[in-house]
Image (cartoon, rainbow, N blue to C red):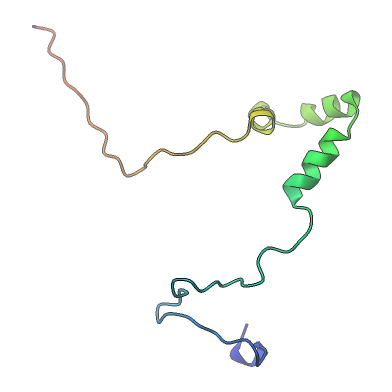
Length: 92
């Protein structure tokens, strides 16, 4: 969006590096109201017959079925952790 396209009542507040200052939102209106895509599919799947669910799941990878049922596993692994090996002597 160019400077000319921005409405007069909307002020651009950014740091010199382009980020927003602490406490300033780039989306002050928030997420649009209404049903999310996840909510839509959850409701649609819940309304399917058992036969429709069977047909649907034949086209979905088994790991995705697991994630739909159990939720996505927590991804809390720190990629910056340095891995070390413990050397064990068999002479002891």
